[in-house]
Image 1: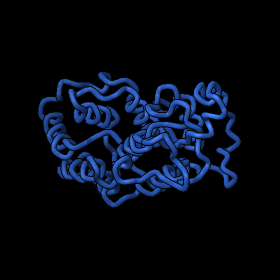
Image 2 (image 1 turned 90 degrees about the horizontal axis):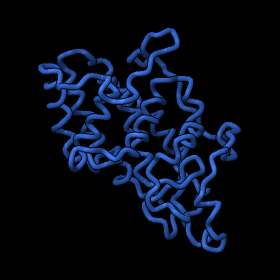
Image 3 (image 1 turned 90 degrees about the vertical axis):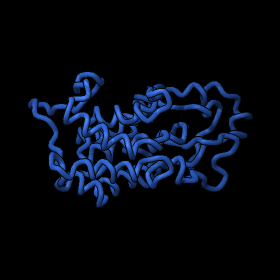
Amino acid sequence: MMSKSRLVSMLPLMFVILVTNGLGFTEEDIQELDLPREDGSYVELEDPGIQELDLPEKDGSYAELEDPYTDPDVVSEDPRRRRSRRCGPDVTSWLIRQMNRNRNNRAIRSCRSWYNTFLWPRCLVQFANLVANCKPWDYKCTQTFRRRSCPYRCPKTVTLCGRCVNYDVPGNIHYGYVGRAASIRRWVLLFAANTVQKGGIDDARDQVAIRIGMDRYDVPSKRANFCRDVLSRIGSLNRDGTSGCQRCTTKY
């Protein structure tokens, strides 16, 4: 997950400014906002027994997922070199379990019940205390992402849906998912991620990962196609440090 050391103070402040002055932003200012249903209505913010994300099959496949997206690093890398470099462990099932569990975290459930009430700023503080720098859900800080011989000569990487990505990708996807589960608006999550970055501009690749997480929550039909969506956007995700790294089949 990207650094969020200032998020604890920024989110409540942002909320107060939003209420009093409108912050100068509208939801149209940030691309890909709350997605309407086919009938034009918006996804309800309540979560009464929402369907969980599907886990990969026991044999490691992803619901018979076809993978038409060629990975140039795997294809072009000399096989002898490829065997000597290995990405971090496969975090796919682990990440899905984290999202399924944490969407019903006590703080997240409180946020849903406090939405549009005077307790809402308290929700933002609680959420920030979960995702801020080296807090429990800052996975690149709190997780080792190591299993057996993975990674090898490919530090700060993990395997996700059979592809090697930077180790901040799982945390960004999780941030978007649980943020929407907490009833925090899509544009607020994106704006907060922008604000806490040095210079106030978030890496566009982080925003792609955050949107994957938000879409998982907002569009129920996409929950069974997690890896399909990840693979369709693989070229836009952070893959720093992954060149020439063979994917790892060891589960995290």
